[in-house]
Length: 223
Image 1: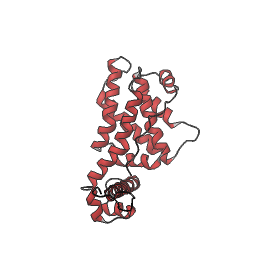
Image 2: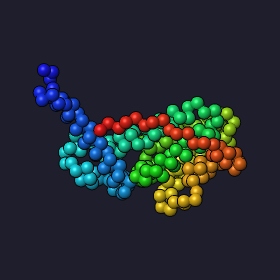
Image 3: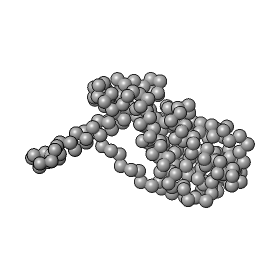
Image 4: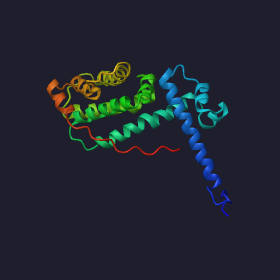
């Protein structure tokens, strides 16, 4: 019989252990995500995460070296993964303005449909380096393309990047505090961002009136 095989004919012992480890890691990340959305990074504590996940402190350190490691894993799963899906969706789009609009609309839509996700990135804030790397680098790339193609008029690209990034987080926060049921926040935010980049109100409205294509399916989370 192969090493680790279950003599009763059930799941192999090694497979059960691996599945249990994945489930425990998932509980820890879900707990950290929820707690971070509630209290922010400065108040996040390992004890709060382990209590919510119902595991011991020692178990936490079997999976993560500390809070920074946990947050980095969350950003990879929650933000970077979404960024890759948006990249795949917009890779063949001819209009840089539509790329920006689609990206902003999906970010806002994700936050509106999943308040914990929205609270998570808002609480991380605009200064967290991993969040900036995941979102800011993509905004910079897409804005530069629009400049190169003559679609955007951006005298100060670094400032435009900061304003656009900050506007997304601020709009998510504002929508969570006081949503406007008669307004589509995704369209408003995208239109404001396009006007920041030099489009006229009419041009921005036309781009944002285009259908919002669905994102590619997300890869299944390991559980």
